Length: 62
Ligand SMILES: [Zn+2]
Image 1 (spheres, protein in one colour):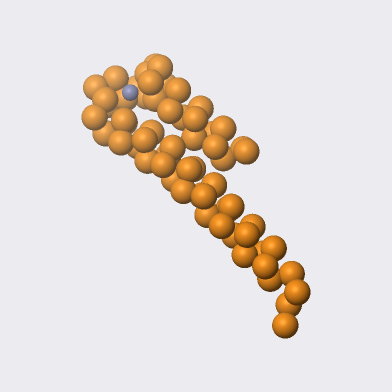
Image 2: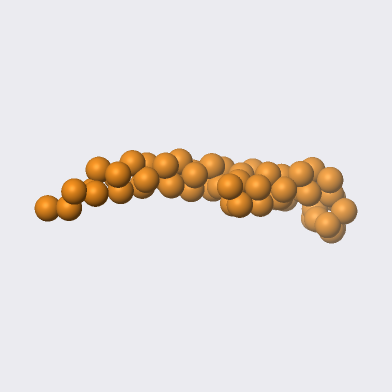
């Protein structure tokens, strides 16, 4: 029926991989915050949380 469905399918696989990457980056940030004594007080002063958040943001922007 739709001649472009093949291309659409490939695009969906690509966006799923992208979505998984974003989810992993977000999960790493959340998991860090749960076990980090610095984040428990103030996550804005934790450099590790800052790095993980940047990874998440970059994954989101790509
Ligand atoms: Zn932290």
